[in-house]
Image (cartoon, rainbow, N blue to C red; front, side):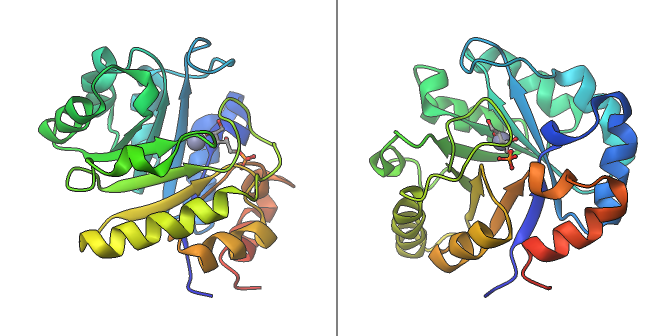
Length: 220
Ligand code: DX5
Ligand code: ZN
């Protein structure tokens, strides 16, 4: 299979040692760092805000892939941009005007991502293809790490890979939720080029991170 980029979700890291954890996965071969922001309203869990992103920024030069699961989302874009996000990804359900939200992310000089929940149809992308740098397919319902991969989302990944080819633009296709070495291969074969992995990266502690990331890349 083609080698995917791996974006470890720090949701599965030791939150008491978050800076060290980010450094450890960076050195273990992570390509990006996936940061899950949850508000207890758009999704049933609470995580971190822009101050934590800012505090983590000195710990890695890798792309900060910030997944916002907050509603409303527009009032917080600037804070995450200033905190050091490189890619800001939003759910179309998190605000009334997703096109405007993506424009706002780009106006802040950041890459813009849109994310589809398992129940969200691909048609939402039809009028966004010229504005997005990344499309994220959720293969679990958002809110928690450690859930099981929803296989029906692979058809969606295949459909979106076709849409990206027809658009003729350089757009990353990322999958998030329940990614492990077996489901990673399915995602890549379906057309994904970036994989988020929380529990599969952080399991076993720091001594295992390099092996875990290599396994996700299909290198072992
Ligand atoms: C879920 C988050 C995911 C999650 C992935 O709402 O968006 O990024 O942390 O965790 P795993 O890889 O354990 O399914
Ligand atoms: Zn995520």
